[in-house]
Image 1 (cartoon, one colour):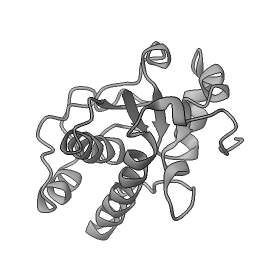
Image 2: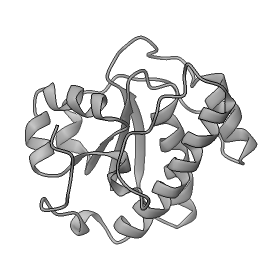
Image 3: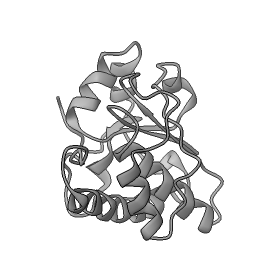
Length: 167
């Protein structure tokens, strides 16, 4: 299974989610490839935001391997799921070549569509304080658990009739 998580700059939310999902999937013995990317290119090649990295480290995760990259529309054909961290990211991804088809196939979704407490956006903690990074990690861990439960047996459990945002 190949999953990529996408936010704007690829330095806070999506690398946090990718780190947690990759480590938890590996711990569960799943052969998943997890990546993250941004819709913008501002931070390409840079490590994740130090506050995201610190929050992950404080909770036992290893954020050291992350380097920001920009989403490539060709990934729609090579990934099972592309998960946008918020509605703006989803709209940006849908506007790329192949984005609407991926959305129609249900392989392009919002990340929190799988959050057991309800769908919504993962708020961008970049301009906030440490509490925002902790809140993002809590959402990510909860949603990661749900993703592992849902797709532990493969992508076949995702159907195009699943509810998703209509933006």
